[in-house]
Length: 363
Ligand SMILES: Nc1nc2c(ncn2[C@@H]2O[C@H](COP(=O)(O)OP(=O)(O)O)[C@@H](O)[C@H]2O)c(=O)[nH]1
Ligand SMILES: [Mg+2]
Image (cartoon, rainbow, N blue to C red; front, side):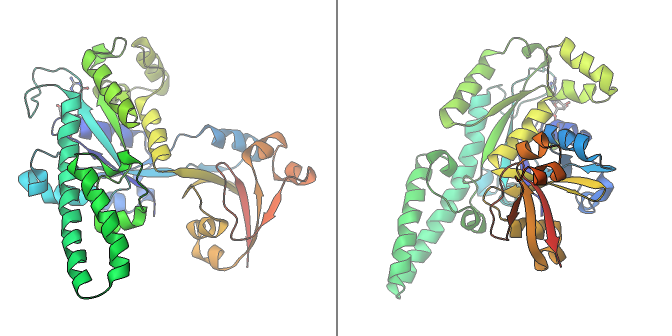
């Protein structure tokens, strides 16, 4: 369990630098056994100001933030969908993620080659997305053939609805457009089981140079415009610089970053943004001496929440006390909230809201 975002881009755009930067800000790896299994997957805690506010009231011995997993996928090149440059393998890795972080190079550096010899972030994005679109088109066209074949041997009604959807997908992909950028209603788990790439939510990290922080370059501005047209976030991060800064103590780092005009670490902004495109919400369990934040999809119920915590809790679920975050904070905790009559007693079907503070009672 846990949501996985994959870092995707051309070679030498700064993907691994970003990955290192993110995982430096991460939680100790020994809590997560698989970390040692795959060195390209890291765990990062989600920055969350609410945790501190709740902690001031409940005084826990331990605070556990919620986490996201990040996957450093090796560079894609043109022709990947045809198997070029280990293409199939890389596309397979992308199929496994829930969201994509595209990294494009905006920084200048004479000693670092660009695979296509020109720093042009918009064109780099188009190259990568074209690969993903082509890979999807192949899948969709194969399915189309199979459905049409199936129609000849019966199963007409179900096949007709599926064919209509497949043809709509094909039409969009033939225009070179990502499925997620069209507003088409897509069943997330169906798309994942088909191995569709362009239905995954994505955002763009512009890896900018140190000199571009205060004064954005034209190519950065063009990329931002490109993102706006698609409703996609473009987040500027000076990865190399921030990685250097991460070696410093917290105090030095703040000073160092603000001296060049970086007010908030790009990683914090990025992790929050991943959280948003994945459609996730947070709930809190202030139980015993531990205050814990949890991540669940929007629309998730108390039953889902219980299962996330422990299968025993899910199976033995009786009911839960639920307080909205503003109520919890303004009444200074569960006790005060109860006295004020704002604690809800809910069953397993209750749909959680972002920020809910939850105490589950179970057998
Ligand atoms: N000047 C400069 N170099 C960078 C920056 N980001 C990454 N690099 C360098 O570019 C090279 C490739 O970076 P890497 O993260 O390995 O790229 P990847 O192939 O996308 O994983 C390395 O030598 C990095 O130090 C940056 O913002 N500015
Ligand atoms: Mg790399």
